[in-house]
Image (cartoon, rainbow, N blue to C red; front, side, top):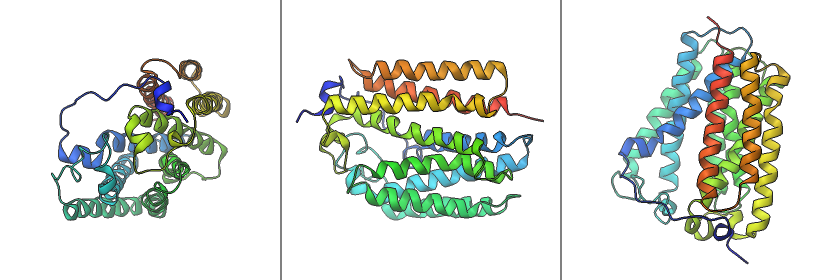
Length: 297
């Protein structure tokens, strides 16, 4: 069976500067994105103003995401040492001891849960659930089944839902379910694109992966179908009233069209790198649209 990565035009990762210990351990860009997505969910609750509660929520989710990242790297330090993408992280590179990383993770998670419990509408229970889902189910199943990714995607959908609940919203409301679903759908092709950028890791690494069992053609078709579903699902934001300003709605249509282009260009030279950047741009733009369209003073 062909290696799926070879057929979709992947190049070896270029040499890059060694990341600082805390930046790599806490994965600060990712953690910040998680925190901002929670803020988007908070502001999406109709008529809810920006307040100290919003700042408290965003800080708590940032700490929680950073703490979960540090704990995950303690759990997977042996596997990280075997892969090109992760071998430069502080633990496998020997720049930080597991005990120190565990202490940092514990302090961050404890501080996050404390802050989440002090909100006007406490959501510490949601934080514990996210911790168990990410560092329990997802991390525990990654070596056994490629479908562990679905648990990771579900965890990625929790921050906007937590923000909505922190604002006093009903978690069964169709508007927040629709917004959270976009984060869930986005996680899968984004993770595939990151995996495709490191062919040795995805095809021969310690974790279960569809790159080990599916041909390039089948994997590309699956990726295109997923991107098509994400493009269609994006249109529910203006349909459900999550985006109300005409300019935001037009930009939302642009995001859907961009995803269709991304699906159409899922093969070819450097396509995985382009797809990864395109999906990050999509989610960044989407979160900014939701935040700025729902800002109230």
